[in-house]
Length: 304
Image (cartoon, rainbow, N blue to C red):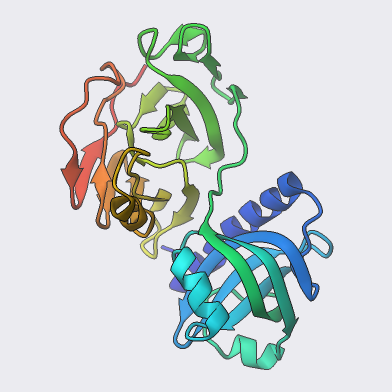
């Protein structure tokens, strides 16, 4: 059984992995100098301070960018971003911040250095999904998107009927229990930009979670271990109201965080919001039940 400290170390590790991947995709964005055009990082809060943690593309070190939550820049950031989600800032200005003071703030992440954010513009929730793949080779077979017939293939055979959706693999976990785990995104239009499924592959075959999501494509997927030692695949996202919805409803949706947790073959939704879709592997994805609110648990099915 893992200790809470080990759990925190592994949580920091998966954040580091995402930050490094983001840096490679985004190019030469510098987090630690006094000014930066744009950067994206996970927002955390602790007492009177909040912080954004990201890896510097220049040094490879994790840097904490701290600010007082009730300051002018802090209020601007908190109004546009959500705790526990990627936060994107423009025109960021920072100054040196005492390392001893930074470590004393009590954040779970322990960076190599600290900066204090003194100015920022354009605070908004971002997405940690930046890698869209049409094909992934696992140890047990190939998962591939069939863009012509709009379905997903496992070892060359369709998992769902033609016309099921436009699929991409957006996260690949190479070690998951006795197999591997993939997060598949089904891309839609402006009314519902994205829905998701976790796909487990092993020597026994393939098993998929029910389709889930709020329709938002602003998502933060990661894998962690609970304090009890159970692996958990988590997708955090915001609620979604389409472009024809009232402005007040769209603003409220953008401030509502929903979390989907896949563990032990069970998919659980937590937090306020609406979950859409409940199609197991052997059902057509369009056969969806009415939206459900609150916390729900659904099972993966369809071993092939």
